[in-house]
Image (tube, rainbow, N blue to C red; front, side):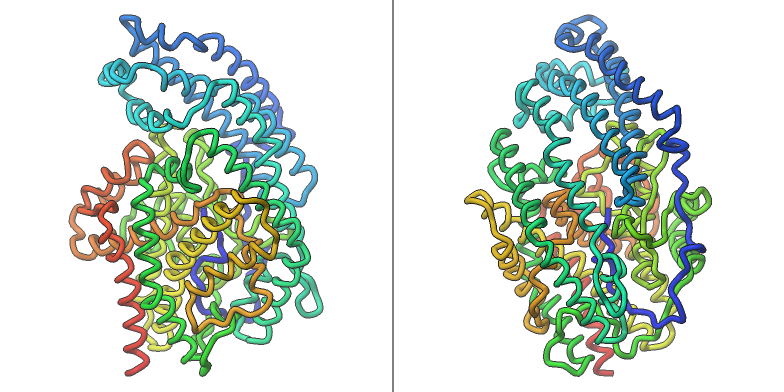
Length: 613
């Protein structure tokens, strides 16, 4: 998933007009269900309700007995197969409801349908919680022996993976309580955030716009328009800050309660566990990025301020197009061709998979009132296919966002062969294919750029993208750590959260960015803080990893494509360190992160040399 405001902040266009929504594709969700009133939705919800009961009657309290039988491996394999099929069905229903809702979060009918389906799926899945809990209570050696060969060997990676959660699992009834109360707890606050953000309107000029167009205006060529948009965003967020502060406080407290009951000691440990990454690896990344601030973000923004003839840039100028950048607006067909050609240059197979998203209407591209802001690729379930949501407005940033989300989509298509239990990829590798897709597209555009000003604009856009992805996202991680740590001492006021936000923003962006009044509220619209606490470091992880991976590709093309596809096809069936080994990479080595950071530094150096030429 990617939140588009932090996609590449590239040259703003000065076009005759933005793409018309009529020319942009909207997704066709019929491959999941024909519509919310489809008889198949009702039939599948009824089927789920009956099958989870039957599954419980067959296996609850009986797994240890099954494992002890002579044919224990085969019996457990049958149980896991049934469990996986149920997970696919549950995921299909929830994916459909979620995608329908994200296309218009302000539609009461869609919101009700989403809420109703979520309640039913939560109730059904609560009856399946016992299965993983009982599997994890089986004797370690006994389970390893049963999964070594025979039918159960198919799911050995999943069995080994869920074993990592064993120390943090609670009694069955407590797990069921946590699970069922999620619908009236965290999920409800998530939905309140989504509907509040989608419903906000920002007064700019003579009209009012939603969050996505308002953020887009902060990349306009006209500084007055950028300033007006920034001030409008800050003012509207400020007038709603009590709501956003309440949501943030409640979710942080909810997480603290869960962490305390499960025995997590650090505020981010539960995320590290779900990502299957060691805390020390993330901390090494965090320290490496913070140490690199002076030679990355501070250095680049000092150079950009010089281009603008200023000592400092105001915060609304941070993502402004370069003064001499050529204007460029891409049509949807141009954007499609750019991405597919870049993918094809790496591998025709990669381009063919991505082309399915265009040919079969798996993409929703127009900007619409009520539509979820940003961009994502939703994997849905292995029995279906992914769907991509973007808010396309024709800029180079949007082309790169399309490349990013299609990278996710290709990854999700390839990983689907692992099945519902092993297809999901931990965040340590979830951003690999997306960032790699961006890199391929950037390199293709750069190779076509003949004019020096166009080349500089592309290089600057990539540097800003990398700073947004690495420096900014790790600053977000630092902000989250402060919020969740301070929340343990009591509720935070909106002003306190503002102060925590400003404390990390100033240090990460450096002295050449002036963070004036209004910017202190900008934390409030970022959905990752709400939906996926501590998700953000996955972007920095993925960017630095891809920089190293791309370096391997540049040095030795032979065999790389095959190894790369093997990595994507593995999904979550192998740990990240094992998947990186064929490339000679080890993210557990603290020095590893400097490889990726040095690539960003090299691009900044190239921009500086162009300035001197």
